[in-house]
Every structure is written in structure tokens, then in C-alpha cells.
Image (cartoon, rainbow, N blue to C red; front, side, top):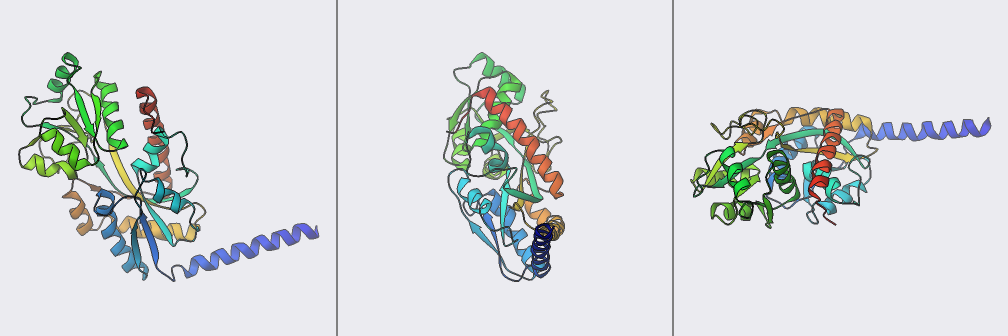
Length: 320
């Protein structure tokens, strides 16, 4: 009994210390790690959020880019950081739900090493072809691909876009061949120049080429038409009911972060991303501000892992 009492007392002491730390938090700067290079889509989403979060918490929120190895470097770094609320991670679809689908082994667990806090944004993809091509609809593009399988291909610079292309193949009954590129800008230019037939891309790299008349947007992958691309029909509207695709970006912390800190962060982030200045800034890039509870974020991660794992398996896509 004495041993049990001592163990219980130790547990209570630890719990009291954690509670006290959570109440004092934050009393020093917070690092917000982005597992990609500066200037990318997640960087654009996170930096204005970090500024407002700093103002609300009364401590600096320092953005730190840790790119490399399909985001594995930044993800592992945060997974192994102290769970004290001073290291946070911008966690998008790619490393949370695509990497588990294509890597047999990861240096982190998307579902066990992180505590989801809140989503920040989501965005559809745009199916685009060169304006030099005759295709005016997805139906015409699919008909061409089925009649000319040796000439049908798609450009993709990262695994989320490759899996989106393979999902399109599976649902449309086509065999577009994947042509890899180093970056989304390279992919967009290749399509515009007619080097590849089409791409499924986020809006940022292709919006300018669409506006310049070098690319033609045939569809968006959202459930409804997107305000950033007025008049462009969805894939659902064009006869592909199972082809709704939206990628997301959110913020997570290392697993074990005190609940009080998670609750405070979720509240602040959920309010920040719905500020008109943030919403308008992201909307101009084809990105929709979106908040969530930690539970809803966890469910989204699990659901998307299952979906993309099935796509990768059917297409026999492996990254290792």
C-alpha cells in the first residue's frame, strides 16, 4: 500500500507540474516549423497566421523552414521535439496522408507522433491543359486519352499531384502516364508548352498562365465551382462523382502536448483563419480558410490516409 501511495503521489506531482507549466505558457518564443521551402503554398498560408498568433499570445511565433526529403526532415524534427507547446508544425496533406501511402517506413507516425490542433485551409486542384490543345471539356480529354494511350500523359512535381493523377486514371478509365518534374512551376510551363498533355495542380503555379491564356482550366476538383475560377465546372458536374479532391494545411504539435495548450491554440487559430484579411488573402490564391477541432482534424487525417493508400496500391506507387 505504501508503494502504491508513493506512486500516486509522484503521478500527482507530475500532473501538477504539467498543469502549472500549461498555465504559464507561453513565456518564451514559439517555433512554427514548415517542412517545405520558404515561398511555397504552406509558407504563404502559415506566415500571416503566425503574425496574428504572436499578437494574441504575447510571444513571438518564429517561422522556421525545414525542407527536404518530401517533408520527412521537418516532420521527424517536430515529432521528436518536446511536447511543451513551444514547437509547432505546419502539417499539410502530403506528409500526413500521402507519405504514409507511398513509403513502407517513415521516421514518424502521422497518427501517433502528433497532436492535431486545427486545420487552417484547404484547396482543390485544377485540371489544366495547354490552350494550344483542342480539348474544351474533360470528356473530350478522356476520349483522346482512350483513343491515344501512347500520347496521353500528365505532369506532376510531388506525390499529392501524382496520386491525384492516378485517382483520375482509376475513375476515368484512362492510362495517362506520369511525367515527373522538379517543381509545380516547371510542370505548369511544360503543359503550357505542350510537352505533356495535362496536369492536376494547385492554383498558385498555374493561375497566371490561365489568366495569360497559355493554359485552359477544364475542371476544378472541389465539390462546387470555385470562386477563384469562375465558370470552370467541377469534375463532379462533368460526370465524375467520385473525383472530389481537396488538399489541406493545418497545425499540429508533438503528441503529449498538454490539453490546456492545445485548447488555447485551437481557439486562437480557428479565429485567426476566419479574419477577413486572412480569408481574402488566401482566396486570391484559390485557397479557402478553414478551421476545425482537433478531433475533426484527426478524422480527416485517418480518412485521407485510407483513401490515398488505396490509390497508391492500385497504381503500384512506391517511394522506396
